[in-house]
Amino acid sequence: MTDMIQIDGVHKLFGELHVLRGVDLTVPAGSVCVVLGPSGSGKSTLLRCVNQLEEIDAGRIRVDGELVGYREESRGGRSELYRLPPRKIAQQRARIGMVFQRFNLFPHMTALENVMEAPVQVKGRSKAAARARAAELLDRVGLADRAGHYPAQLSGGQQQRVAIARALAMDPELMLFDEPTSALDPELVGEVLGVMQDLAADGMTMMVVTHEIGFAREVGDQVVFMDDGVVVEQGRPADVLDHPTQQRTREFLSKVL
Image (cartoon, rainbow, N blue to C red; front, top):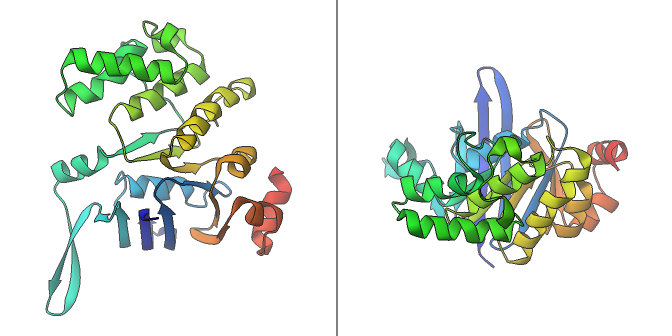
């Protein structure tokens, strides 16, 4: 199995705040990687670095074998990184779907219009083709009957499912989820996790930052526990969740299980 994501020695600083401290992580294609950890541990920043919403300060990130955000050149026996132009980074980002904690839907557009917007504007698809694909994706996330509704007319869970459909409309190779259920009322969490579970069953490569331990246990192929900008522990869900080897992991799980 090839690796969809390769993260090697990644550091990220915000001023003097060292948020990521040499993170190494691989996510095989077709697998689900669930990232757990306390607030401020660097989980969301790591996702944003994979999607090039944040520049890294050291290290390398590759998606499907391609270095993202930078090109690498050898000069005088040394390897140097050069930031890619925004247009090239946007092309790379178009292969990666990202779903945020807040749904970020366009309030003046219907669910259908939200889903079809990016394929028309970014990929140049015809409106007819984008509309047909958007309708198909809304049906996939269980919202065929809400296609003409505006975000204000939808529940939080429904809005998040529209956001997932919108990300899928770009035909991504990889989906990133940044705490997709944390802004939802508890009774709405299951409908979003159900859609994500279906995606996993279809073989979508996913990296999910979440506090939903049940999802990590049932759907994850690997669980990564982060704290203070480093990967403390990683492995199969049953190993990390039921038999953690690190004291910090045990302390965290004792508070969330």
